[in-house]
Length: 169
Image 1 (cartoon, rainbow, N blue to C red):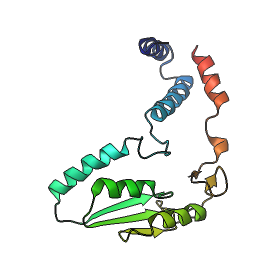
Image 2 (image 1 turned 30 degrees about the vertical axis):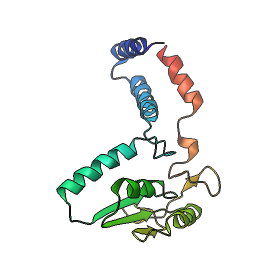
Image 3 (image 1 turned 180 degrees about the horizontal axis):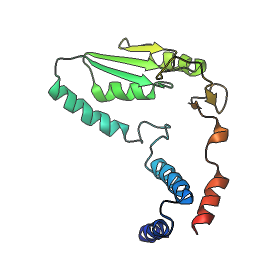
Image 4 (image 1 turned 120 degrees about the vertical axis):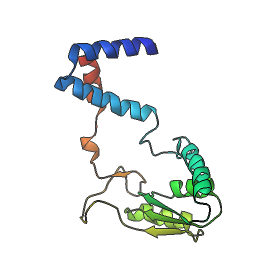
């Protein structure tokens, strides 16, 4: 199917099913697929997610606007330090402070090992949220860097995707 055919199909589907529960579910799923296709939420590579380009642009803008101020960056869900490493590379040398928050014990140990030589990086083994609470952190395997507050059982499955495709046909 070409891009034009896909767009034509989606517009036809929308016209025939606007404002229905089924169309809301379908377009919610389509939204998730589109975000995935743009690299949003993949979390597997800061090098390919577009983050580097944004940070390099931001570094230049901040340097021009606030040349003598200390830059402070918060990395919530720091994982093993990929983002803080990218930030240090993009922002270069200067007055910088990086606060890394990672709740997983195994992942925090790796984060500490990966960043221990950087005196501008402060690490905290906690999660950040809008209120104090105890929550379960789900992982795909012991010691994995992949973690979520949502159980994998509640995410969209391939069969749900296939069902949504059949409904749209």
